[in-house]
Amino acid sequence: MVHRVTTSSINAELVRNMQQSYNKYADLTTKISSGKKINSIIDNPSEAIDIIDTKRELNRIDVWQDNISTLANELNQSMDSIDIVIEKVQRVKDLATSAANETFSEERLNSILEEVDTLIESIVSSANTKYKGNYIFSGTNTQTPPYEVQYDKNNNIIGIKYNGTMPYGEWERQLEISEGVFQTGNVTGFEVFGDADAEGHPTGIMGELIDFKNTLEDIVNNNGKTHTDITNLLDNFTHSINQISGINSRLGTINNKLEMFSNSLNSTKLNLKEFLSGAEDIDMTEAITEWYSSQYAYQASMQVFTKFNSMSILNYI
Image 1 (spheres, rainbow, N blue to C red):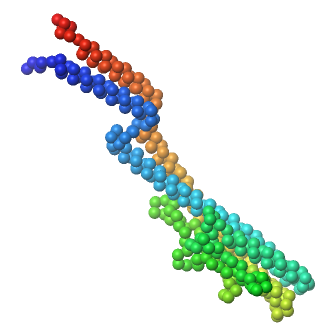
Image 2 (image 1 turned 45 degrees about the vertical axis):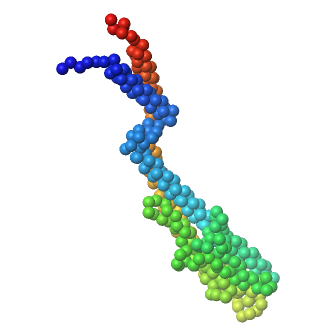
Image 3 (image 1 turned 90 degrees about the vertical axis):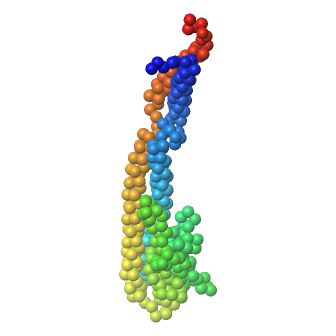
């Protein structure tokens, strides 16, 4: 069977070749301009979906890393504040050791009392530390100062009241640091420092501070307390300092955990970015070489098409 080649069929073939050359040229132009192999999902649906999923995962990792940074910074602030409190409480213990000396005069004891009042207010200030506008030792009551110094009508310190969330029930502030992994980044002031409400039973370091102050005042005012009672408080100070130090070590362990998760996420992020680069980024040298070839091919197809359409019947005689 003989197939007849007509002018219209040749023209259609030339148009098709020219269109294909142009499409390749235009596609390479877009890729070189963007630096990306895939600029829309229709370029390669399968790889485009992989790229979208990878970018989504990278966004999730960014969120987790931000959460880790927030938790780590708050933990560091908490540990720094606790260290400051320990330092000040150690000073109170030193004063108590000195005050246990029966040779101290009433004037000297009053001087110690004044310094203890100053230290109590300073310790409460450290316990009321904020991070990003939130009180870090208030539990979930982040807009309420966890501690307030209580005074009598003569402006004498009589207690240290805790107003934060108690260390049971809903006191934790958690953030997600990996897929389904949530980490608590706070500890309640009550667990760390205790409470010395003038109307309640004093506990923790706050309780030891008020006990020491009250004992000193009773000695000065001859209300039945002796220097031996101060000596008995020294072991309580040591116990409270050790308890706080233990909590600080626990917070340090959490910080180490956060660092491990951060390192793991960084590694995953690096691998995902390498995959994304391989899936998205073009080889610029290779692409430009191919672009010049496609440009020449497109120009050649246009020249053939133009020449063919300018021919008359005389060209075939």
